[in-house]
Every structure is written in structure tokens, then in C-alpha cells.
Image (cartoon, rainbow, N blue to C red; front, side, top):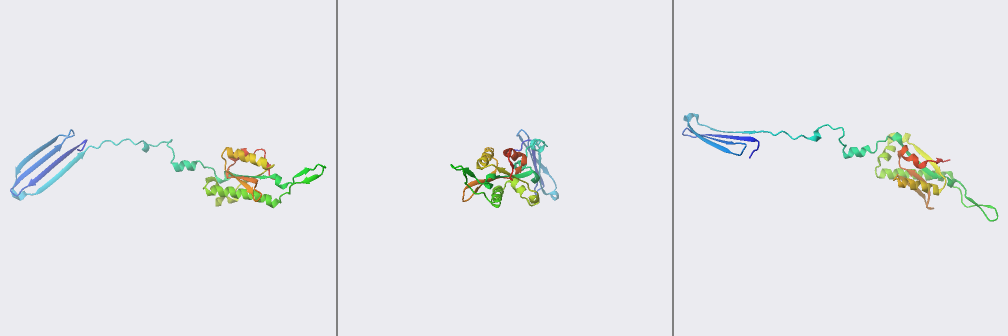
Length: 225
């Protein structure tokens, strides 16, 4: 059954004797079928065979598709939304490094007899600089390993000559651990550099992030000097 439409069928059959049989069938919208048969005589030289089918279907109006209408508040696709989370430009990104200042000092204590005894040897300047370099490279490597958008932008070929770093000094290992604890609490990405074979914490480096996101964790610290 074709709803909302009308089927009209006619069959003309010309026989060799000149007798024409016309059969008409009509199917109404209510499902009723009307059939009529008509016999007609025509001359033989007009004999032929003809059939025709005519179908008319009333097309219902298409349902209104809300998605076809422009909507300024329509949400972005998943890929677009994900991309929107990282909109910072390379010029806005910075990497913070914090190195222990006490590595450059000789620790001393006073003996019972009043003399001063050195308990540690200061690290050479090159070794101290290496601690920051190790931490910075390790943090970048970790970010690139998981395809971090900010790290990729920070190390882009066009950004290499303009990358920004802030190198600060922490009083000692306790002060450095305190900074790490604050960043871990807020899930800020960073890397702890543990110098081997001593297995001591010497430096910390953040992943590249916008400065306003990181600056609050390093208030009160001064540039390493």
C-alpha cells in the first residue's frame, strides 16, 4: 500500500480479432480498490499492444532538521574543543628552572674545640649548570613523548630563537622539595632531576606553559646567581 498517494493502472490489450480489453484499477487513499473492464472493437489494422502505469505520490513535508539551522551556540567538534584547550602562542610560553644554590657553597660546622670544619665540597660551576640543563631537557623530552601541544609549540623550528626560560635558585633541597609539592598538588607538569650516583635532588624544570600559570609557584625566589 502507498500511503498518501494514488495508484492508477491501465492495460490496453489489442487482440488479433480487433477486440480491445481495457482494465482500469484505482487504489484510493482509504485502501479501497475500484476495478473496471471495458470491451471495445476496433479495426484489425489498428491492432497493437500498449501498457502504461501512472503513479502519483503526495510527498509529505520534510521534517525540520534543527541541525540545519545556524546556531551561534552550537558546540565545536571534539577535535576543535581539544584544540581550544591549548590556544597559547609560542611567545607566551616559558620554562622555569630551579637549581639548588647550596651546591655552590661549602658547608661548614664548628667543632667542639671551636675550629671550623668543612663538611662538603662546592660543586664546580659547570656541574651546577649541567643540573639545570639535564632537568630542562628531561622535561621537554617528557612533553614531546606524549605529544603535549605546548611543548611542541615551544620547540617548533620557528620558536627556537625566541624561547624563554627563567632560571631561579632555591636555598637548599628542602626548599626545592617544597616547590615540587605545590606543583604536584595542582597537577602542574615538571621534572625532578636526581643526580646520580649520589641520588640527590639538584634541579627542577617545568614543562613549557604560559607564564601566568607558573609564576605563582616561584614567588620569593631570585634569579640564580
